[in-house]
Image (cartoon, rainbow, N blue to C red; front, top):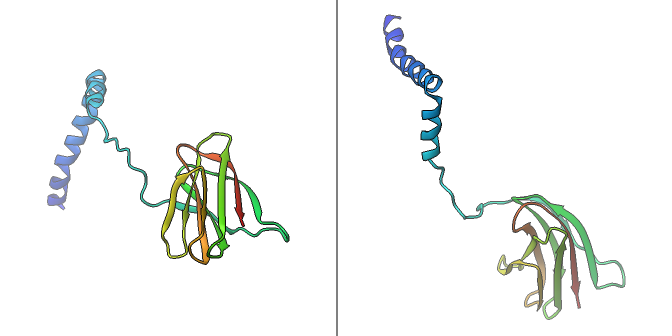
Length: 149
């Protein structure tokens, strides 16, 4: 038991000295902490959590749909829509905050477009297309318009 007491004595003394110094010299500790900066990176998170995933279905006799939703910063709302080769798909997103964007991923997990607010194109393969809604900054409420002809 005596050895245990000796091994913990040194770290406790260092902790006590450090706490005492911060109480005695608070201005010095504050100025030193201002000199030490945290790393700043402009990279976006590699993995985003999907918040919502739902299938877009057109009402009978129509070829378009409008989806209203909201997305929090760092999350993605994911929608699936079925399209046939040769059809023209048009997607637009509007948000009050002007920061909502979408990405489209094709049936073979090929990214068709990244972080856009408007896109139109002819579908090259039949299958499910994934539309991921995210933001450029902060959260956003949005209206997603999708049509296929």
